[in-house]
Image 1 (spheres, rainbow, N blue to C red):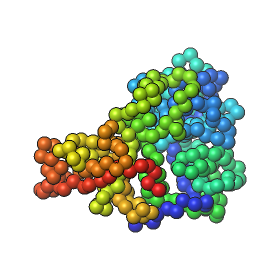
Image 2: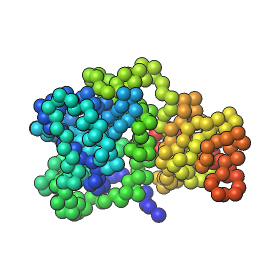
Image 3: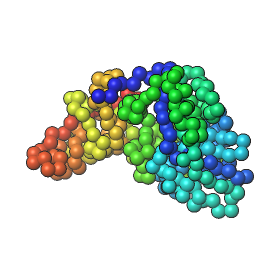
Image 4: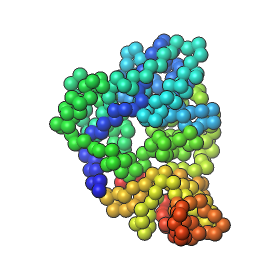
Length: 318
């Protein structure tokens, strides 16, 4: 059983394997600002910004972090985007003096949760908020991965992937492939404060983002969900109204048990009209049909599966 992570000064995560791109060329700033939801001018050598790359309909092509160096910008993204992200960016390099190089295999990234900057030798250190609290990215040559990991382990506790996933869900942080896909608009994932600059110039997908800002409404929103009977929840479960004859209300994207609040919790997209804190819904493993909530059953179960009562709550959970 994975023990709850106590977020404190002195923890680090190994993010090696994240897609790492170097963007060079005289037009790199103008080009990237035309592709990314945040203002790349805010990225620095010691500070990274969060952003999204969108399609023309405002839906996410990628979720990224960007920092700067004197002659380039550095982009890191989830490993699953290694092929799709550079291809998406290259598609819009037309007459621009921009080069995009994949250096994933040559670099390692660690993330330190600490109030003060760590100081491992011969590394690039960047301030960045990946979780609820500010942290520090440590960039090193891949050949030095084990050496840097040992340096950090002498000062901080290593957070294993299972504990990191629990922390992510507890904090309501969206993840590519779960809460973030090519069907999601970043505002729906609560990324507007972290990853969207409404004052910058035009970028692909901006019209959709601006229209949502003006209306103040989204069709769905990423919410926290708590299992009222403390029954475990699962990604992929469908959500329905507990009062409107099984009317569909959304779906669960990630789920875990939080030992901090001693509850079974989940992240999920809940449709407008059902996503206010305190609203009670029902979760079940199959799509809701005319038979109502109790008609849902897992494949090959041979019996009806009772829906699990859940309640919408504000994020983060802790």
